[in-house]
Picture 1 (cartoon, rainbow, N blue to C red):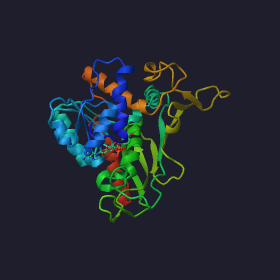
Picture 2 (cartoon, protein in one colour):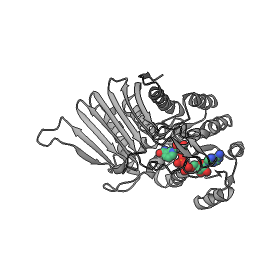
Picture 3 (spheres, rainbow, N blue to C red):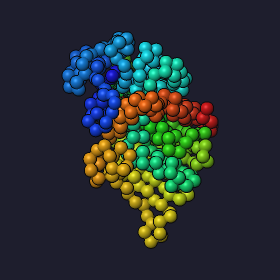
Picture 4 (cartoon, helix red, strand yellow):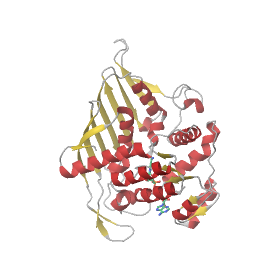
Amino acid sequence: MIGYGFMGRAHSNAYKRVNDFFDLEYRPVLQAICARDEAKAKQFADNWGYASVETDWRKLIERKDIDAVDICVPNNLHHDIAIAAAKAGKMILCEKPLSMNTAEGQEMVDAVEKAGVANTVWYNYRRVPAVTLAKQLIDEGRLGRIFHYRANFLQDWTISADLPQGGAGLWRIDVKAAGSGVTGDLLAHCIDTALWLNGPITSVTAMTETFIKERKHTESGKVEPVGIDDACAFLCRFANGSLAIFESTRYARGHKALYTFEINGADASIAWDLHDLHRLNYFDHRDDSIVRGWRSIHVTDGDMPYMGHWWVPGLQIGYEHSFVHQVADFLQNLAAKRPTSPTFRQALETQKVCDAVLASAKSGQWVNVK
Ligand SMILES: NC(=O)c1ccc[n+]([C@@H]2O[C@H](COP(=O)([O-])OP(=O)(O)OC[C@H]3O[C@@H](n4cnc5c(N)ncnc54)[C@H](O)[C@@H]3O)[C@@H](O)[C@H]2O)c1
């Protein structure tokens, strides 16, 4: 594993828990943690049970005792690490967004496919049971023809103009490390879910804003221009004829991580909210009118996605379990020699939509997704 921050912890927890709850042919071995600060990396290794420490990711990749590399570092490092890991024949689990842009992402796809190594990108919301159930309901045709898709991802943590950019914890505000702002960080999640649930996006029109134009850079100590989008809203068309509206910002006072989506079909609608992630809201117009209404499905029964592996009906699970599910699927698919979605190639589709969104915001024109 490279990087021991937020995702380093979420993934380590998943690797440790997965065999306790899923019957799998393979068991992850936490062989090495890589980070630049040796003392902190050692502390992390002791805490989470990693057998060794590396401070240079290139050395980690050279090691013969490593079969899989997990990329949990800022976005500007994904490309070089993934390409080196693929060349070394390692399996790769890469955090999202896949890359800084489509061109980089395409090189990563080419590298893993040329090397023939197993690969996946951690768009973990696909594996929240309520979201997986939404996919099942849509694939069963319960919604009928889909007219609308609506998604939000709202936060409020960058409103203060005193917040610096760059460095540990604040690399997301530094365009050189993040590639973009809310588009690649938050909307990428909404787009991945949308492509999975509702198919390809064909064209977009977007607006972005950078509310705080300059911030002190943690590394240089100087006030520097802010290059990321603080907020982004876009309209788009899907190949299935449906229309969509997406919004993301880090300036929605009062919201910490409000990821919501709603899909309206001719026969039924579904809605989901990360703050209540084990529930799926469902409205079916085919119900008798006297009992028709939005129902809140508590996704905890054993026949619902992933839930048979956990507790008893009525008892819910949480955010961290989506990562456990991704590891379980990855290991199961490895044994069955199947790809694990989203693969690098599938995650590249999200990158293409992000690029189209940023290009449209710049030009003020509708942009076709290539
Ligand atoms: N799937 C999700 O829901 C989700 C959530 C958060 C973050 N992410 C993604 O995960 C990645 C990491 O984000 P995070 O929130 O864990 O960040 P973080 O800041 O918490 O952790 C980043 C880690 O990378 C390490 N690092 C930085 N440069 C390094 C280098 N050259 N060599 C080795 N280690 C280095 C840092 O020391 C730190 O441990 C990003 O790509 C982000 O977009 C995904």
